[in-house]
Amino acid sequence: MGICNSKPSPKPNLFAPKDELIEENNTIKQPSSSPIIQKKEQLEEETKKKKKDEEVGKRSPFFPFYSPSPAHYLFSKKSPAPSSNSTTPRRFFKRPFPPPSPAKHIRAVLARRHGSVKPNEAAIPEGSDGEHVAGLDKSFGFLKNFGSKYELGEEVGRGHFGYTCAAKFKKGDLKGQQVAVKVIPKAKMTTAIAIEDVRREVKILRALTGHDNLVQFYDAYEDPENVYIVMELCEGGELLDRILSRGGKYSEDDAKAVMIQILNVVAFCHLQGVVHRDLKPENFLFTSKDENSQLKAIDFGLSDFVKPDERLNDIVGSAYYVAPEVLHRSYSTEADVWSIGVIAYILLCGSRPFWARTESGIFRAVLKADPSFDEPPWPSLSSEGKDFVKRLLNKDPRKRMTAAQALSHPWIRNYSDVKVPLDILIFKLMKTYMRSSSLRKAALRALSKTLTVDELFYSKEQFSLLEPNKGGSINLENIRTALMKNATDAMKESRIHEFLPSLNALQYRRMDFEEFCAAALSVHQLEALERWEQHARCAYEIFEKEGNRAIIIEELASELGLSPSVPVHAVLHDWIRHTDGKLSFLGFVKLLHGVSSRNIAKAQ
Ligand SMILES: Nc1ncnc2c1ncn2[C@@H]1O[C@H](COP(=O)(O)OP(=O)(O)OP(=O)(O)O)[C@@H](O)[C@H]1O
Ligand SMILES: [Ca+2]
Ligand SMILES: [Ca+2]
Image (cartoon, rainbow, N blue to C red; front, side):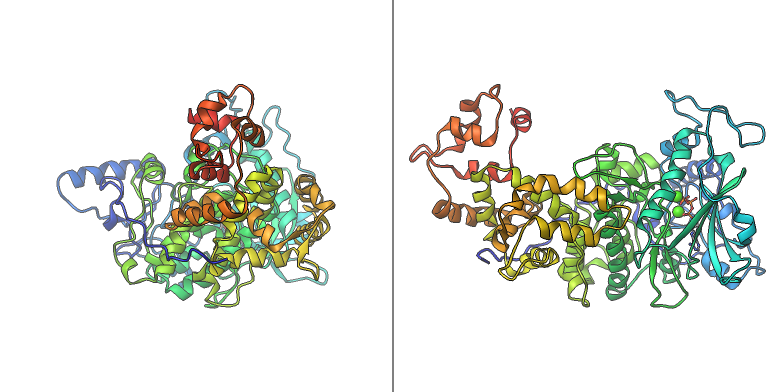
């Protein structure tokens, strides 16, 4: 192993069109004025004004991180009034200026969830008491005695769906102990989707709670007016506030410490089959004001369960953090990793990678523009740091690192003793591998032999998490044990059911590390590397010696499982070398990618 070991060189940086990404307006810097509190209509007004100002050559006076929806700040009791000193110091520092990201979710989603505008979905009007809307069942089966157990205190935060208060236990052993309570008014739940979202938020919190970097969930209550989600109180404020209080930038080491915690919890969620869908600095809270305080993921309000082969299609999230494939309506857990890439980019340079004044402008940038790595401070940052961010922000989800892979990236793993968690991806890859033809397995094996020691770090970690026997091999039982060990109680059954059947062949035989490297190898990810061509050439040489054999077109077609409708001679003509009837380099690379009648038909 370790035949190809050239280093990747940085990718060329293409700038976003100037009218979309206006750098000078996209940097986190200290505010020059009191908070700008904008309602949506106000904002549209101001955006228009801004455009006009620019047309006449004036520089916009607005703070760079403009927020199209400031509901959070509008209603926060603690938000400092303009030029007022009467607020608490925390608040003063907390919100001296608008947030660097739109707290709001993508407009269409909000509209749908709140039932305002969706042409083909009957929006049910709110009842006069804001609670009983015809046909909607707003009972959740949660506990009913919230008021007798807790005493609500001051508000600590607010979002689009509810507000969060500190609260205390009224009696019992825990009397006086503080918790946080997210209060979601039932009056706001005006569609079945909105109700289902709350149900799912609680279900997911309940299923996932227990991870160090996930807010501890205690219980959910309801009364005729509200749903109450009781959880641990995080007193250190949002990650967003820390970014702002540092003037927007983190040192590489400080950014790593934050990234490790974010990646850890997200890898965990993905392993459990949950995609968060709203990762942004507002949704990570510090437990205390301490510099080294632990970070916790919150707000699973847009999260969903996703099965291994399933693609989700609803456009959900917050504009600056939304992944391109979400906008294309076909996505899975990789979309969260993109959002982490956006957070990493912001942490390291203080600007957003995709910026525009309008939501559609942001979407265009996300789909088309490459973020800049040329402007300060990027030239002075480590090449590993840049490589890390670029691999999170790959527009092709198949080529993007997973959260567990990101924890294995040299930029992170050399920082401290990071424990790499079990990666959902290896189960997906192994599943595909087990279904592949013997010819493809041989090709993958050849490719895996070209991996460098560095590139094998991740596979080694994953393999050891599957706890091989003394002989260094795994079977179905090892995989079952690892899944059981890593799944939460709520998820055990579903995860086992989702993965084990496809790996059934390992009931009767074992898999050693060498084969595991081939099985758990993502050709798409390797293809994203600068040195892909080299890997492929080296692998072909190995394949020539170890796996290549003369094959006739019909046999190849049946190995590939092509349907009889595919004109095999026309399609596979170049896949076979005419001199000796063995697989050509082209055929080899195609085989590595795996083919199906469908993508062959598409390529025609
Ligand atoms: N456990 C907690 N401890 C302290 N503060 C919290 C806690 N949970 C939430 N908050 C505060 O309340 C705010 C709103 O909570 P959350 O994000 O869950 O609400 P939301 O209505 O779903 O928001 P969004 O508009 O982002 O969807 C958070 O940004 C945070 O400042
Ligand atoms: Ca939130
Ligand atoms: Ca939310």
